[in-house]
Length: 130
Image 1 (cartoon, rainbow, N blue to C red):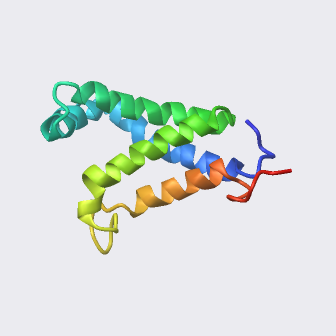
Image 2: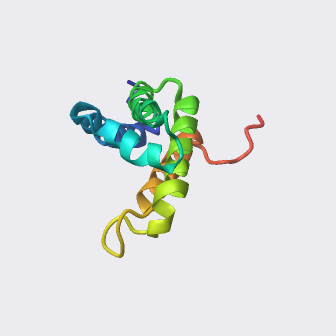
Image 3: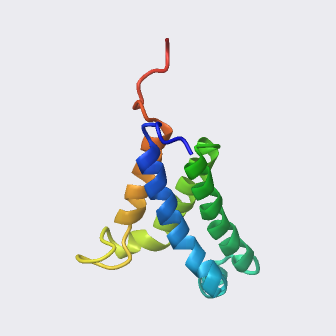
């Protein structure tokens, strides 16, 4: 773990969120329900369950990468892709709010995407010229 890196706290927070979002559903088997009861019904049959597992395992792998400060770019790109797909397929139609002003919205995914972009570009988007 690189504790001195300016993105340490953000990487740790996102890793915790990804792990707590994925590990319980893997442990309980709910990942299979996501594959069967959602992904297969929206057009991914017969690969809904393997796809659900790929999504959950990508979260675990990304969390490990973030904690170890290794392979950050591919981990962030895959995770951002999953989060954007979730917004498009599931959350956008529910509105902005996850709770409060609505239910199951996309504000949470939006925040995670912005944090991952901040991790990818810790010095901002300024030119990398020397």
